Amino acid sequence: MRKFLGDVLDQFDEEPEKQWFQHPIIIYGAVIILIIGVLFRIMEWPFSHHLILLGVVLMMVRSTIFFFTKMRKFAEWLYFLSRMNLSVAIILTFLSPLSSHNYISLSLAAFGFCYLILVLSQPKQNKNQPTQENIEDDY
Image (cartoon, rainbow, N blue to C red; front, side):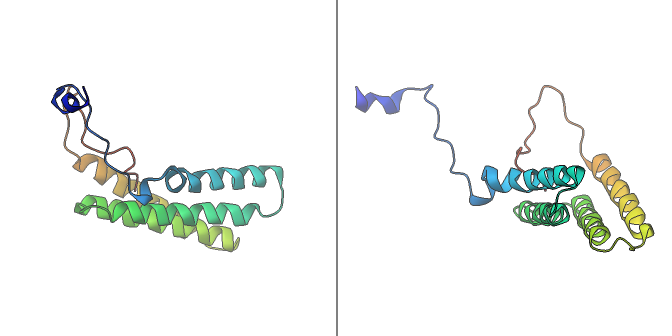
C-alpha cells in the first residue's frame, strides 16, 4: 500500500519550509512589546518609555528585513522610506520631549502622502481572483 501513495492525485504537497524571518516571534514580537510598553505607560509604571522605544525599533528592523526580501517598486520604496522616517520621528519625540512637533507633523504628512501613492499605484484586482501577496509580507 505504501508504494501507491505517490500515485494518489489528491495528496497535498508538502508545505515549503518557512525562513527564520517568518517565525511568529519575529512577526508579532515587536507589536507585543509595544503594546506592553503602552500598557506600562497608561499605568505609569517604570520602563514604559524603554519598552515603547524597543517595540518601535524592533518594528523598524522587522520592516527592513521584510522589505529587502523581494524586489520592490518605486512607490513601495517611497512608502518604506516615509514609514522609517515617521518611526525615527516617533523615537526622537520619546527621547526628547522638547523636540520639534513640526518634524513629526511633516513626517506624518509625508507618510500619508506616500501611502496614498502606494494605494493608487496598486493594480485593481478582480474579486474572484485570489491575491498573490503573502500575509507575512508586512514591511
